[in-house]
Image (tube, rainbow, N blue to C red; front, side):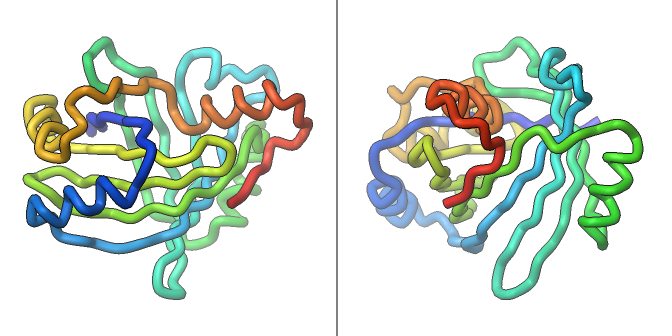
Length: 185
């Protein structure tokens, strides 16, 4: 099984991180808008057991890809580490109907602007999200590589956020007493 290992960091400015990426010789990969729809049972069984089922639309350059992902519970680690299984699907609406036919309901939907970079074996994502602000995610093959990239970007003192964007947005919507479970930039 594939494990996802990442550091998620709240930052004040994506521009400052982007300048660090350029100074370090990082390669810019692409800019995209990702729209995520999270599915769960009516009783929120997946959320309660720290799992996630997500259908993502990833738009770049006029082309849209759809990816279905399962994320397992987070493992004990200094970094956010969990099983992640993904597969591309050709028809997002058919997949949504299939999930609903299996008893899943759309629990949350939001989008984010993401600028992806490659640095020293890691993918560095500069993310802007509604209600939450800006973040950096550093995903890599292991904790040591991620720590080296985090240090190279001058972010060693930034605390790691273990919560997913979905959990943070869900919590923020509840704090604001908003009934909607869909929020977009």
